[in-house]
Length: 186
Image (cartoon, rainbow, N blue to C red; front, side, top):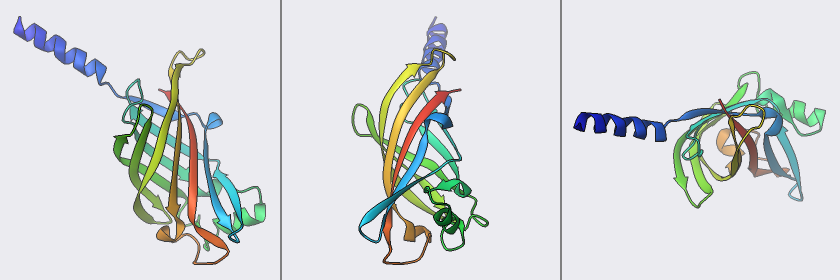
């Protein structure tokens, strides 16, 4: 009898803590950034090609992210500037075609808020970065009958820490990131 109770308890625990794979729906997600220009204005942009996956349970608690962003997909609505950003002066996309992020820790800060820390590799340099996160909600998609989670991640990185661009008075050092995600359970 004890053995049966133990097995049932183990199965129930395993079911409750089961981790699912979630993938960003790129059509409904955006990896955006903003940087100060000439110390008077802000230029915004985004990366159009990315693969963002997470493992998390059905309530999307304690997600573990793996991110791969194609640096060639940078878009600031100005072709000349984008070409310069792709050059060796900035992202050097020939040598560094991706920037990556992998979660190292998760801290719940409120009912729907959290801090996500991970290793960001950009321009061949890896440093820890902490992002503020908010879980906007979870629904069951009517078409797929699978869960979808909406999240917003924000944070700031110092581009000079990663060797992106030189020390210049025309650009701010801090890059503000805003990542809006719609994650689909796989």
